[in-house]
Image (tube, rainbow, N blue to C red):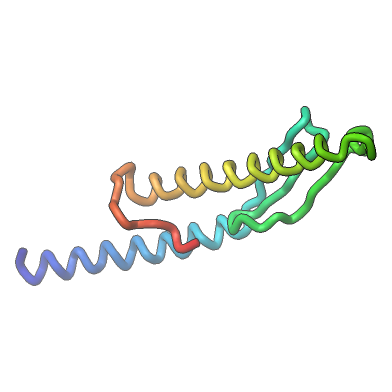
Length: 108
């Protein structure tokens, strides 16, 4: 590879890094909702996997069955996290044009 080729490659890498920074900013702004129990428990998370809010339908609050509520909250949180991961994966494949680049992970 001549010097020109290396220079072009560096430009490509810089372009990709700029795109990644842009996507990371978009992900941080993004909000996804995970729900469980037919929407009885809803969890909103952002693209950094931070939980923004949890909404619990009063009907599902039963002091005799706290375990079910706990399970629903866990399921809703996991659903929200999975949506964030799917969103990250989709953005990565757009970035790499579907190429799987080993070791290239979003920085979070």
